[in-house]
Image (tube, rainbow, N blue to C red; front, side, top):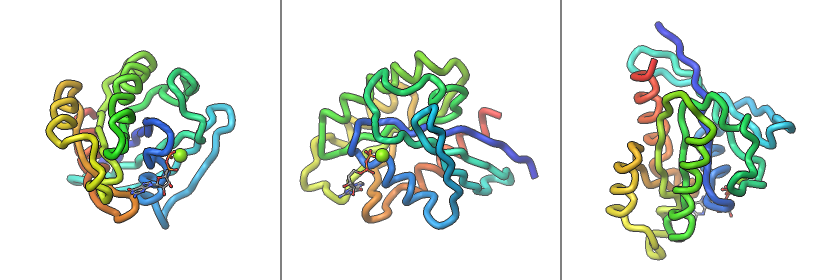
Length: 170
Ligand code: GDP
Ligand code: MG
């Protein structure tokens, strides 16, 4: 069986639920390492997809995330990016554009992008429609999923689809 390793960076405005999504995904079977120089931590997660062993190194910010505040090393050689907004906050959705341009500025290899509207358990307070998000995702060539870290909705599916796209890049 072929093995591929990929670096996945998680991006998005503070409090959209990045850490919650990552913890939910890797929960139980992770090894966490901290890189003080980069101001971030990463988790390793292994899955098997279409006869490939995929080892994901998922990077999460240490909580000081602001545009242009992330060390270039955070983005370096990333193979995938989870672009997370809070679907109850339009501002966090509009922020994604800035994260994408930061990503493009720092990564020159092909990268799989996945737009994620988190907190879908709070859809009564929705400020971003599925249609608007889907159209934006399409315009930047990204996958799109709505998730809830709280209720464990959509997260596994999002990472699985990212892994499937990653295999195509190798
Ligand atoms: P980060 O700053 O982007 O890493 O966000 P955190 O993971 O620290 O989460 C920020 C806050 O949002 C915390 O109070 C979480 O409990 C809450 N939160 C995260 N994901 C969800 C979700 O899917 N639904 C709801 N209702 N709250 C969430
Ligand atoms: Mg966090």
